[in-house]
Image (cartoon, rainbow, N blue to C red; front, side, top):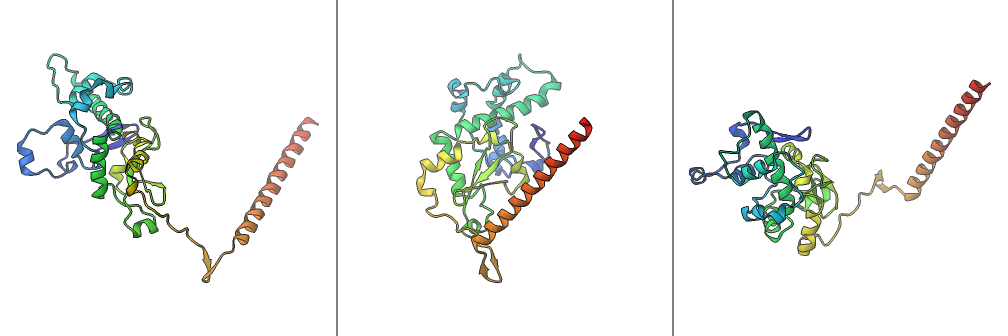
Length: 252
């Protein structure tokens, strides 16, 4: 199983971790990018064009974010330098670094025209899933992956619904383990600005609480809230008085 755990990726070599690849594909040499994107739980990723990765401008500032940067970059691009190999005990760390580096490059790539087109294809095919909110689910509203932070290891990936405009955990726990920084805070919103025709033209009707079929009048909720606030104020006042009495008693 492979996922984001304790700030790092964990992986196994079990064949169950791989998505199905056709026989013709197996006969060809599989690139690292192809292998990575076909792992189960990596359905949210698109394959980054190698020419994008090879352009140093697109990687500006990333060398300080992951260890073994040059080696990790070479691994992603399938560059093997026999004269510059890391010791065997560092290979696991290198694999983790390569996965993290691909993820943060991915967050940049999906902001480009080519990357966004690849993500749109997945969105149109409902690869990212549907919103779990009842009104959204009723209309089969698809969602997009989103990060709550652009910083690695800050939070896991979420999915964002344009209809109710809320974010949720992905339904699959495998996808929930993905780092949110691999999709970033910008992509989902830029996607709908770029494709406004995909943005829902309405919003879901709010849930209306009822008692025996009758709507609960707003004044009832307002009165209940005022009562809670008043009770909270009395409790705080009593606690302050007890604290003051205790201080005076010790002072005496």
